[in-house]
Amino acid sequence: MNSHVNVSGIDKSYGDLQIMGGVSFHIAAGEFVSLVGPSGCGKSTVLEMIGGLKTPDAGSITIHGEEVNGPRASTGIIFQEAATLPWRNTLDNVTLSLEVRGASKADRQAAAKKAIASVGLQGFEKHYPAQLSGGMRQRVSLARVLTTSPELILADEPFGALDEQTRLIVALELLSAVAQTSASVLFVTHSIQEAVLLSDRVLVMSARPGQIIDEVVIDLPKTRNADLIGSPEVNKYSDRVWQSLRAEAQRSLEMQGRPS
Image 1 (cartoon, rainbow, N blue to C red):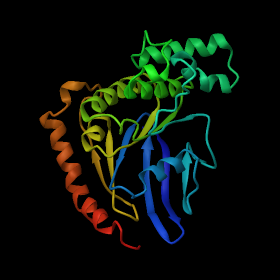
Image 2 (image 1 turned 45 degrees about the horizontal axis):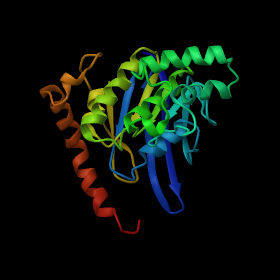
Image 3 (image 1 turned 90 degrees about the horizontal axis):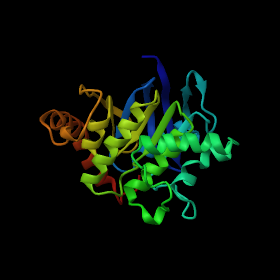
Image 4 (image 1 turned 90 degrees about the vertical axis):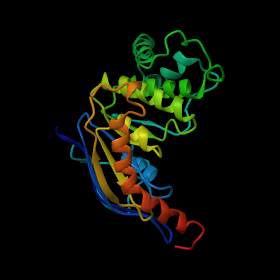
């Protein structure tokens, strides 16, 4: 596959606190890559820099060979909190991105209905966010991103507020919806099993200052379902990721509350 995203030697500090140093990796076209690591290692910051929301202090980020200098129309972002407007129903929330871009009402509603179907929310078009579960609200956010036909989807711990069982089921629904597109995905998560279930590759970051210390290629069927949850294959890869992450998680705990 052709390289879609290239991250080369990026650093980021806030004052005297260095968050990451020399982070480098790539995402191939159509590839699903997860990023795991201890709290504070810079996972979300990496995602925000690829999305053009923050700027690295050093290094470079390119998409299709072009330097990222700000948000791109072809990049969709799903944040930790579902970005739904409480006064708009599901259909109107999903059409929002296309509405901002000036698409006609007919075009944006057609795209929204297709996206809503792809994330399994048929029948909830007229429901408001307060009437939806947390997982359903995140599916609304995903559907809104899908209406723009993104080349790259950045997901920052989108199911972190859900219980473990629900988040894995909803995550697999996300994978199924994305599989219907040609989008590449960078998925930030604290859940090793979630990363393994979804990904072609899992990248492991060290404790602060974060670096990529391991890459685990996940050799599972491209089409995945709930039968894989807790399976020997998934457990094998989860153990492999944990072996790389364990010492870094301990080091991160030891650094908490200590001046850097």
